[in-house]
Amino acid sequence: MTTQGERHTHRAHGSRRRMIALCTAGAVAVAIGVLLTETGDWLEGAGRTTAEARRALSTDAVPPLQPLSEKDFFVAERYFPATRPIDQDGYKAQRTLGHQGEDCTLTLADRAHDVLRETGCQGYVVVGYLREDRQVVSSVTVLRYADQAAAEKARQVLAADSAAIAFVTADPAAPTPIGSPAPGAAKPVTDTQVEAVGHYLTVTSSRFADQRPSAPANDGSLGAATRAVSFTARAPFMWL
Image (cartoon, rainbow, N blue to C red; front, side, top):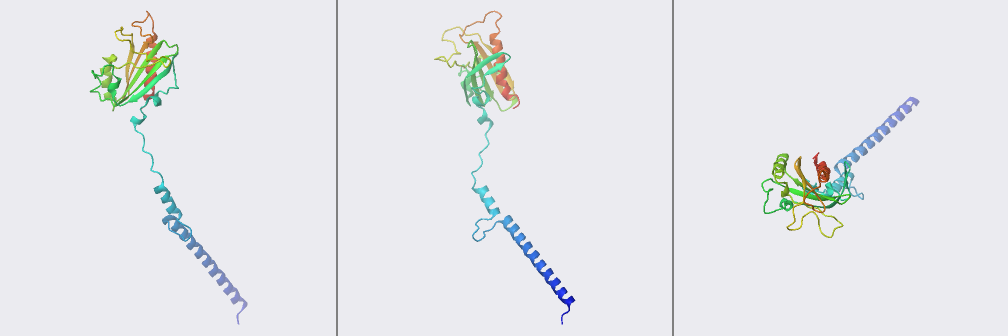
């Protein structure tokens, strides 16, 4: 004969057993879920598990693009956009042309006399500017070197022979380029500034658009143009 106390005891034991079973089943389910998530396995009708899918995304994706080098970034439009005019200390000018390359001899006025041969020049950018009133043109040549010492060596070479760098600029409204005198004509008066900034070298020159061989007395037009354009040329490289 089962007493009332025994029936209570059996029910308590049964409740505890059911609770233990439920907890055990839950723990197993969680463990399986963690295992499948971490290891990744195939479940019938479910396809790839989460971990496997993540690995697939990483291996099937398009390979990352290779980072661009300094040479790739060394282009006229990056540093001197055609849409960005100069407005420096009251001097205003619009960029005319711009191009770049790796053969630095192309920047020379006389390629047979290669003053850059021993300097280690790695590339160049050339841009031209036309003053707002179209009376003064400026030419900028930026040369790139491996380090600051090489750029300083080149600066010394060109400071002694600034005319070695070709004067290149153009008036977009003119049918032919301006900036070079006609054959046999007197050389135009030119103001030039050669500056090293980091491992870059800038050569900035200004002339009157009509290529006159001399400047009026007390006329500081060319000097003002050269200073403003030279500052613009050096500014992008001051923190590189």
